[in-house]
Length: 307
Image (cartoon, rainbow, N blue to C red; front, side, top):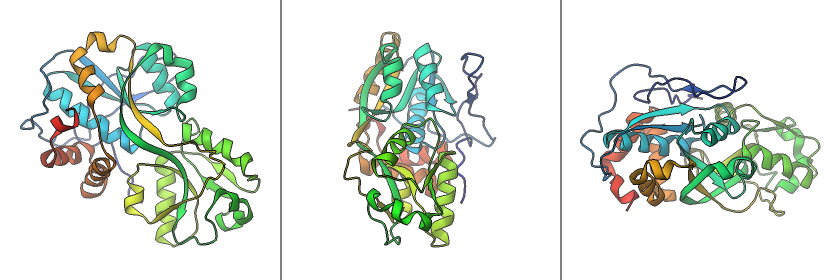
């Protein structure tokens, strides 16, 4: 599978976020080339100044594209913007709570990131939800006729080589699936965690060979547009109900950046808009995030997203 690189183009390079000595984070490096030109786009934001750090987790594609939207919008308005990568959600939430990161656009509530909100919530501001139709899933290719529900998964363990292909160990999705495993008596499959990129690579390879595979996934995600997938039924509701995707900031951010906070609170992306944006970035522009987002902005009015 083509591994999508979020290190192309104009994502800002900055110093590593200053966390404790045991924690690591990295800023997004530029691979060279001209930055996409969004100077002619009217983002509808009042001019401002100051430095803003946006936190993002590689592989969480809805967050990646939403973050780049705001990177370009805030840069256009006069702010100095750095996009900071974190390998795990826990590291990002700690950096956000400490004020080393200003904004995170991919907080799933009330379930997926509940653990982090319990630990850090009193140090954070919940600025607003920008999508209200998010869901955690366990999925198989549609051609896998033998399994339609999580209740049938264990009886078909051999079909999947005894593995459920997961994402990062610290992800809320991973925690949810770990809870679903005993609920459905899944004793003959092991949840194999690694990274979102690895999961998508294995999914792509399996589908290309028309082989069975079961993966942990979520909606909205561009994979549902690219592949014919089937979500396994969850009759016990172990993966939770529909959630919202939220913009989170460190405590005091809205006082320091009132205009930005007000715009972020109004920000909305519908399922159709998000799917179109992800398709433009990851399919039409082959994962060149800045170029893909700029192209999408050329056809869509950002000011309507914060109206």
